[in-house]
Length: 342
Image (cartoon, rainbow, N blue to C red; front, side, top):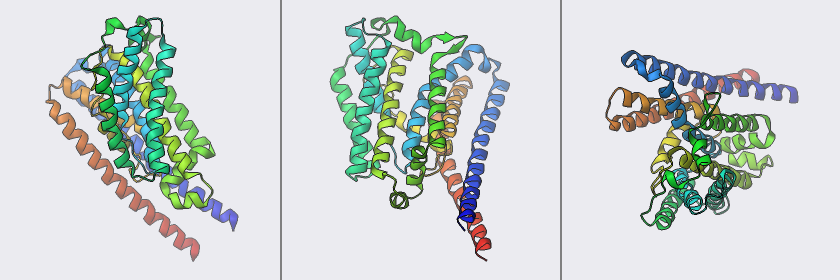
């Protein structure tokens, strides 16, 4: 009987994995179609500089989407990531402009620490304060923006005030590959491996599937949710440092509104907003798809308004597909269970 139960669980997991692997492949197919159509209209779209810009622009969004995925998998959400990026970019830039002796390591440590602190506040309020995640992170979004504007006092950070080593991180390459995409890919692979291969990583999926069942199984639900927010905040802090190194010039409202792009990338990438399913690889592909759409619209000289409209349409489509897939999987599982029962 236990062997039969294990076999059934393994079969269920394989079915869900197959469904969402197909979802990720569909994003790759959509990317290919988008690129082919755009190149057909403007052949310069896939120039060396064009491809480099797409991956550079996608890198920061990929980092934020990876962190957001861990939160969404636990059936929560973090709307404060965009404001964390802005706060970290300006604060770290301010420190570095005041003292050029502080290098990249200081910038990364400070940025990650500020982001982790913001994530810790979110995690404590959601997991231990039992306040709905939407309410908490919407509130901290505005609080962090307010702190950012207070620190800035209308000033801006200029690239000439920053250490050259930091700017080279955002725009330099190794063997022709920019640093930023390499960092984003390494983080994505490490997080994906952890979630898939470690019991503590699979706990996040268990919480998203059913917090009550996870608690009964001995999972420390509150601590795991807090860890998810802490991790999301830390990655947003790293993204803020990379934003500073990429653009050099930073004002108080940097990355304003990016939280919606991040959530869209995650959901379009197959991470169900209801929690429990999805991968960081899909979220990264979703981020790359949205970035490519933006670049394609610029090349095609389409109004920026349509970028928001297309992003919204993709978000609605992704949520609808998630719901249909969930119903389909549930139907198949019921059929299998009824066969085993009989």
